[in-house]
Image 1 (tube, rainbow, N blue to C red):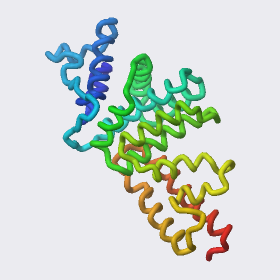
Image 2 (cartoon, helix red, strand yellow; image 1 turned 180 degrees about the vertical axis):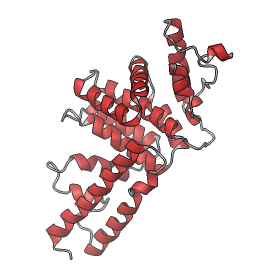
Image 3 (cartoon, rainbow, N blue to C red; image 1 turned 90 degrees about the vertical axis):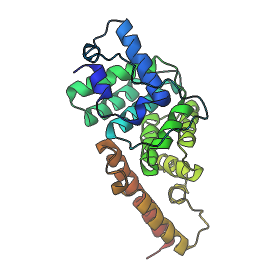
Image 4 (cartoon, rainbow, N blue to C red; image 1 turned 135 degrees about the vertical axis):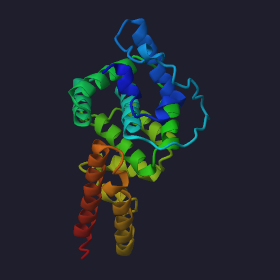
Length: 261
């Protein structure tokens, strides 16, 4: 299967806007370099011809149903943004991404996705316009898990570089996530550093009453239930499950500290 057919197969909203422009430019560049992506040309199409080269800041998009393929491509584009943020490409990050690709594609698909990632890493990508397009087309629960996955990547080497943090915060804001929700996700990586991490995960203050703690737990458990992202792909569901467990861990931590029954 050619890279073009793999990229185009089953996609929707990513074929327009800034993501579509990026994909179109990459495919055009691959053709110029003589890379075999031409099965669609033989059918009378041209690589990049289906793509909208718009996506200027402030552009809004007609909401479409996001496919699993859309979400995977979106994550791959954002992964490239985070990997480039600190000006270095680490082996630990690359291995983490390769594992993600193997978990989401068959062997051939994972190789093609890795080829696309290498092309993305060579391009200047505006994370704000890309994340804004994603925010227009992907449900809130899935957007939360996309940011969760990016935070996993940024922490894989044990050092959360401020430049990575800035890019991920830009992505979260561009996708329309609240600051409280971003802080809740970020707190998962502060268990050994922040004594109040569990409260931040539940989006409450340490001065909250026991009743407020219980209400916050119920609200967050519902928000991060894996069923909320059931149609977004296996890896997104996996991350939602991890967050759901973390919400339970945070609640148990507070219950133990307070002696709540």
